[in-house]
Picture: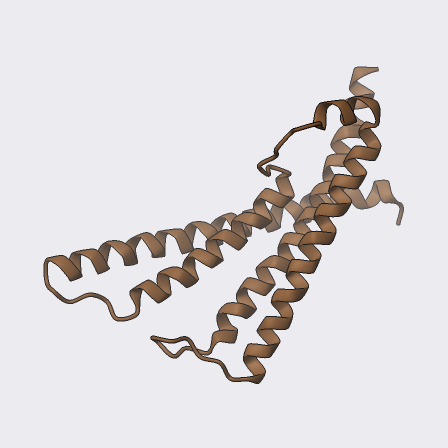
Length: 173
């Protein structure tokens, strides 16, 4: 299979991944908001807060962050500090993109690897959360999985952008 034949498939897989991440992050954010609302109402009106709500909200926040990271990586929508960006892009745009994307993929892969190692370690140690005493590897494993999906979506996004760039060059000529 050539690179050109793989690009439409990469785009289709990327679209499915982004849709799944959007649904997942939206659901986690909704649960987090409802949990916060019910906890605050229960705490101040009924003097009965939800046990472990702050711990659950912390876990949901981590899930929202890492699912959102996959979306940002796929769409290449990161916060960028452009100190000398314009000059480098002007003189060597392809090299610049290759270095930035390569570094970004390597860094995200390292993060995913470390998170995976932490998930394995928490499972081996049978580590538990402080308040609810849930197995910690559920949370660390989910975050590790989302980090791996983020790397995959970043690579697929890069392949899809290359296809879009080629189409833009053809349209301009």
